[in-house]
Length: 451
Image (cartoon, rainbow, N blue to C red; front, side, top):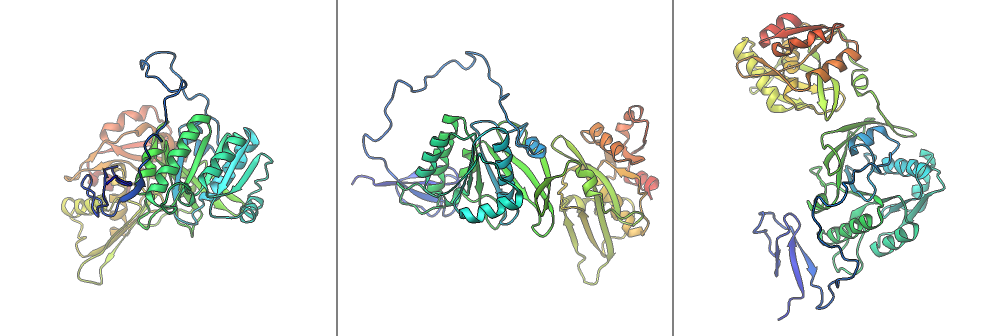
């Protein structure tokens, strides 16, 4: 009997002739999706315009100098310097976080500066998007709107308009009419994304796709979309607060560790050009348990306030809560204080928070966490003009960290007077005469200087 369809795993691409509950290739459950088998003779025939294999180093190397700006310097930073024509970017985030707002502002700015932009919505009507556009003052005459979910119709309009930028909100609502699967299934996502990628590369049109996320906060798909697109962006933040963080988790044209900071205002998203001042704006001075550290996000140093609260537990087992910092590093810092410095923390509840919603998980904030815990435990504040930088080892020593010079430049720019650093970084004192750099070998040395 001739096979009517094939089944493939959405996680690893494993193919089989029958449906399986668990993939033999990667072990994922319920990841198989059905795809019809093409009829004999329906495959694309070779044409005179087919691409031929050529030596890799033949011809002149082409760089991505043709990037164009998104009008958001923060977004350009995450993208690696701007939008690359022909690239396909996937933007994911929780519902209501501001994905459509960001992309509509982006579409209007690009339309004003570079040419025709097409905004395709499969979830909202023309009237709904127009109301948002009025609020955001997105009134460019070169910004076109299409309410459509049929992929073939979307491709037809793209070929007619030849826009410089296409935004599809969202890819989960788009469907290929020739496939029997329902919209949002792995098969539909795979085929629709593949066709959009092909069209973008063929015409040199940049494309942004909006992707839904699961309850765990990862892109739905499961991993099919991330493998097929050029750039994957994650838009995070608390929908009840103004702060929004944009990170790149995949970028074929730049670094993947950059971060952009936005503030949600009534008139739309506003980029935060000085994140350090933003995170320290409401810092309370002279309060125990508060220490400023300098974290590095990509190529940008950011000053963040670390707050700690140590208090006697009312239960048998003390609580350990970490928000915005690595839980394991917080526990490590508490263990070092108890073992090496004699702090009685076994019967204390410990709460540590990175203020502002930023997540700092690098070892460079270990010393700041340790000082914040000690300050709260002793109820004595750390000097408000002091910044703590360093990794803490299990023996209580303070180790060197990377990008120290960049961090110190940010400390100087924000007006702090003193920095606690590992002894190995004391050589930088000659380059930074405006601040006092204190070298510490152990956590005990840092406590002696700070508290």
